Length: 158
Image (cartoon, rainbow, N blue to C red; front, side, top):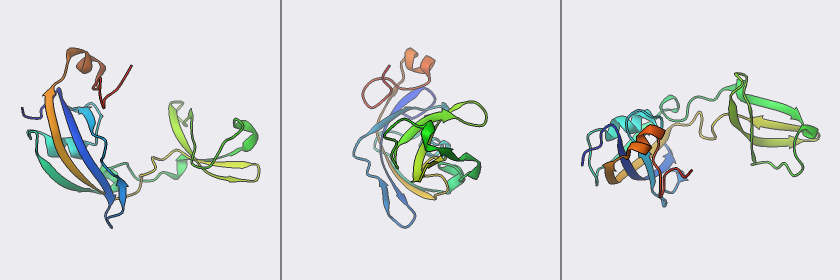
């Protein structure tokens, strides 16, 4: 079966920076709903369109085609007393961005009574190499199409 809109695609992928440092080992397969639903990077969808199970490719993506450029407006410095006890560097917290939407902030540093947060994706600003292998392609269910993501093993669970 060819990869086209409304197919569920099972991938195995490794992600490294352009110097070859491994970022994601690709041991766990992932499944996404193909067709512009935002479930994988657009350049990956573009490369997989029309392909079949067994297809392999390697894509070098610049930051704007991967996880975006770093945005210093997403950095926050807040008093530690505003955080729950046990806040640690490397932790993630949900908060509201400037637009009022919920987003994830990474705890980057705790300096005295101040916590430094970063709302950028951890891979923002990095050029990345994606080694992708298509393991399976199937028609998505009506429910998956309605919810705009794959359900079940390696997909979204409600």
